[in-house]
Image 1 (tube, rainbow, N blue to C red):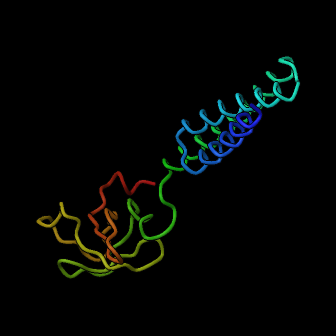
Image 2 (cartoon, one colour):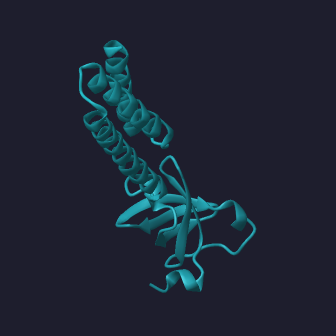
Amino acid sequence: MITLGFVLLLMGAVLAVAEAHVPGGVLGVAGGVALIAGGIIVIATLGGGAALAVPVGVGLGAAAGGWALVTTRTAASARRMRIQAGAESLCGHVGVVRSWHEPAGQVFVDGALWRARHGWAEIDGEALHEGDPIVVERVSGLTLSVRRAEEWELIA
């Protein structure tokens, strides 16, 4: 019986660690239940009474559940954040046309010159000229897809 308790404790710890790597809540709950059951079985098998086994088991389960909750919330908030580094972070940023010769040109965005082309929706629209404000729609390699900025996007 003591072997079963130790297996449950080990399995509970592994599931709690797995929850940190694959956050979703299910592994953390399963790990907490395994820790509670394993703790109660080990303490009861070693001669401890229920007065000792139950509080220790519940304490282990609460610690695992708290860990799972913190990990899941941290991962969920990280998924909602915008990309903050690399070329992909330029999407939505406002820049200025430096030179434009249809269908492409150069734009100045976030302190750097980039090759740019019209976004798909503006191919038939009015041509861009030097000094026009633009908004980055997409990044494809080192080329930006841009469109003319609207008035409300320039107010900052």
